[in-house]
Image 1 (cartoon, rainbow, N blue to C red):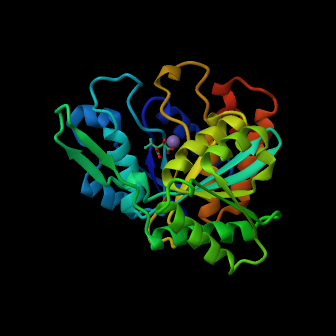
Image 2 (tube, helix red, strand yellow):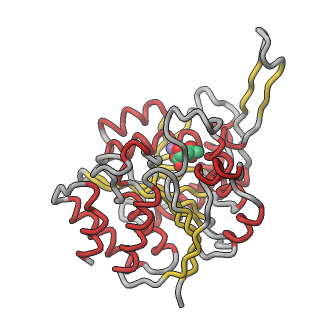
Length: 328
Ligand code: IPM
Ligand code: MN
């Protein structure tokens, strides 16, 4: 039976790279029944809507979501900053309880995975203003960490580490300064670790991890961290393995009670639109992750291998999608 996939093509280069990814999936022989959802910057400019409840309900009835990058051009003045990001991307992650952000990185001889907590931390929207607009204005932005949220994320990371050859898991945080959130993460990590004696563990402060990612990335196998540290570290990780243009990501609901969402780590790159710099590799990798999550492990692995071999020939970025589809 065809998998039912909700498609959000995205803004900027999104529609091009999403079309390329769907072409690659078809070339790999996997049948999808797609529903295209009109959400993104264009829709917002047209009717002021980001993601309505009926959009959300319709999307939720699918097996998975393939999403392109969303967001207006950098410097855009028509859409208030963050409207699209919070109104669509974060809303989907939170509403569909996609609590794991799985970010695998491969390239330059490196292969590691970052597990980013995806529903809490500084992204939760806790905080507010006092005396806004006055010289004595106060802004707070809390980081929300629940035992439930941290533990399910840490457990997922240990389970993933168990499936890998090195069975190594590093917790990244800032326990020396973030004494409440860091303490909860560290205690939870240590307690769960006791259930996984076969997984070797390490801890890095996030600032030190930034140095290691650049100078000694081989040390990493699986990394687990909170939402904001994970956001920043995975852009760095993308750059370290050869460019964030190659990184696909899965926003997972591991229990499969709601659809998981697959997207590129990079943004909508409006400036590349129509040029030969439009690179579908990350979106194709996202589609491969989606297939693997949908039980099409074989097709997913074949796509990922083909992307690697096509990239090894240094192609013009805009030709990658066709080249991968042809090679399959
Ligand atoms: C990402 C993006 C998003 C995030 C933005 C667009 C809200 O940077 O997926 O990494 O911060 O999570
Ligand atoms: Mn990011």
